[in-house]
Image (tube, rainbow, N blue to C red; front, side):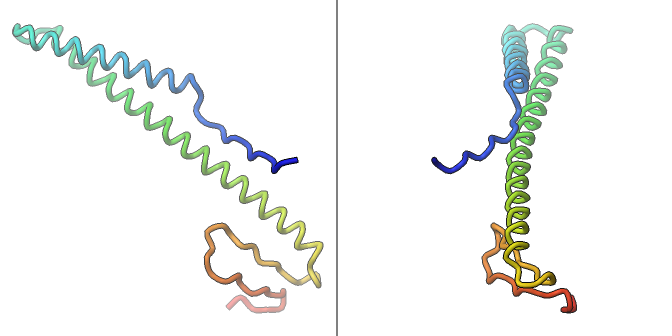
Length: 129
């Protein structure tokens, strides 16, 4: 039996991506419409203002939704890593409790980002300073 697969973190779904794509399609349409109106060479009218407003608004909405989706994905990955770390800590505490020599011993937990030597074990009688 192989190693258990790590759970897939919750990421933004297809509905969120649909709204980002929809905003991008609308923004593209408004920008093309504005370009056609400008190339036509007529004086600026209400249609120009409407096309420009629609182009700017839908572009901003698309960017904001895209940033939101990217942030949610990043947060989901960090949350999954935090959950894995908490499981590792609790498993280490569980196994350390069974392997401890005495009730006052604290078994140090080595973190993933720790590159130095493992800290020494302290008993409950040691001072913290």
